[in-house]
Length: 129
Length: 467
Picture 1 (cartoon, each protein chain N blue to C red):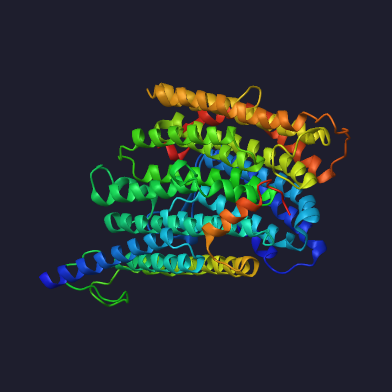
Picture 2 (picture 1 turned 90 degrees about the vertical axis):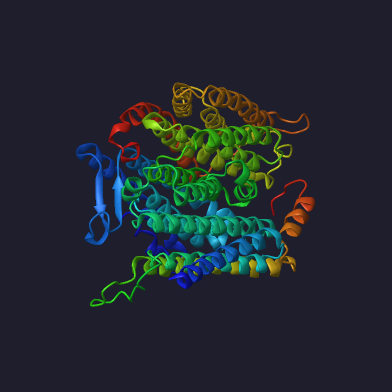
């Protein structure tokens, strides 16, 4: 029982640490691809957190797979949520990756602050192409 | 039902058929939303369970008078923006026009979904649908590096905010075991649950990102100025309506959190800051972006005062802002397209070239600032009432102050557009009919909407949000 509580605590804590590292990574890394990787880590830890909600009562008898006939099935709704969230995350990563490809073709650099500042200096007149 | 429309347009189309299909899709959506309002007026709040699964278990869509009117207004504004974008696509976007149509339709679907849904995870899904479309719309001009970079920044932080929202939704599910908003509201009756407080904080942060309120507004000026003009019109107007509805649903689900005072403080600071940035901006579209921040901060202020009047006033302001901002972006887009610059000093005297567009722009600004007889006046008045009657005098005073500062900012743009430099010869050109219809339609909407603000706000009893 105690071991289970501790393991559960470690699991949730490690998810939170991963999410924090990801958020820090998004904010502190100028390169777009690194931001994208950090974003993926954030999304995946969110999905794991949701899936863990299926256990709901983490201590005591372990829940069973959500198949009819088992006495105490795990909650299947978070699994559906995770599938949806993963697919959405996939689509958004694709959008960002395509933007990154075009940006690299254009500028030869993927550093977002650099691009924005450089464009700001060049486009002092805010002339549209 | 209303958002199955973009699917046919997602396939590759022959260039001639893209525009009629797009307009047909928008027309269908608008008509259906209009029928929806009639339905709500006849039989009260409409509830629809997806797949037949009953309410607490399945996803439910619940539409009251606020949601129905918003869906209709959003569709109508999108229709008029769509008419403009046919002209804009031909002249500015070229081969990328069908992608604009697809993204605009998916944005509209996401927005309508957010407005109608009564399930918190479905809210997240629809929000991501709308947000993904807006990332694409901002980065649509992929020949401009600045547009791509602005879109990338918006996308990175938008996905981060939405994923944090997902964390918060998971926390709520841990505590409550249901995803239905009513179920959450029943479960969170005490304000001091750890899960409830943490989720509320995270959800509020994410909402303030999508509403572009001060700490989280950093993506907006770049994104809305770099997007193509009809896209900016939809992003500033239509997406903000959905962000407001999202926030009001989150506040509905967690009713007992005492967030009014901090949120009022932050929104007041945000509106003041953005109005100053609006007044000193050199780029006209950037100024409009800051104006969006001003107005969404005001909407948020109205929303957190709680009660039927606050919610009704915030929704009404969202709708009038959508019409006014769309009109402003479309009219400015005409000048920006013609003179190939967004710099306010380079656009000296541009107003004389297209007097109709200039007139439309001035009326849009007057509505945004809140002068009668335009609808913006009535919605701002109700916001003021909501704040003052709830006892929040300082935010009400700030609302008035912010309107004054924004008025200066808008009039500055109008003055620069009208004042012809001494060396220039004024001339006039005619606008394309698509543009004329769009601009005149939005102006008419601005005026006609004034009549409907009062019943919308007073009729808050039939909206589920105020229950």
